[in-house]
Length: 241
Image (cartoon, rainbow, N blue to C red; front, side, top):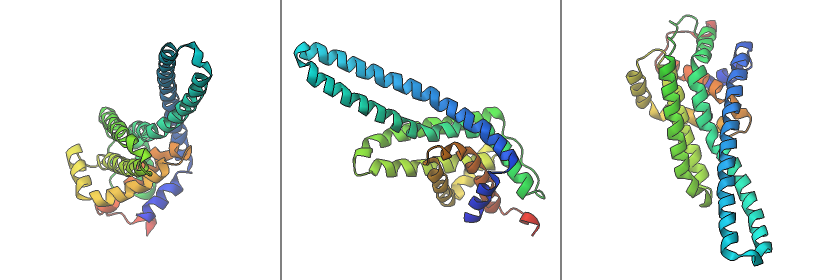
């Protein structure tokens, strides 16, 4: 598994991967900006509505305490925006992976597995559906974890574990669907769910690092291509050995 991760990381700096990185990172950044603006406006709207209600309730005689309260509320809103972006990142990378996964997988198979039959590109509609499903499921799971953030970091642990499961699941299935029908790919993932989950922990570690996590689709896809080859007993003798 560590050998697969090392190979995936080393290939990320190759010229073909850099080209995909620029496209995938640009798209991910654009989606994050759009979501951040929407989230900021939602928080501002909620804060403004609450401020108007408070001012109407307490009257104009409590302007100083109200100003202090609104200042605190603005700080909380800014923190909420930052946390929101952190929680949205895995969902965004899931969407991006669905669009660029085959382009990345083809590069890995061509360089490391030239003697193996090449995989077939996952239909764009199927890849998009899988990406949207994981993104929506990610957001649902992360929203459930938010209340536990206040309990001695329990929410952060839940967030990390959920990210490992969801990211490992998506990237492995996308890699497997290049060689198997969707139902078989999912069955293969369930057969090796322990290994896939541990591999997902490595992807979750990367997605938790700001800026670097924009490269998650490249690493996750390349890593799981290697894992799929190993778990299915690829006949290839890698690197000419």
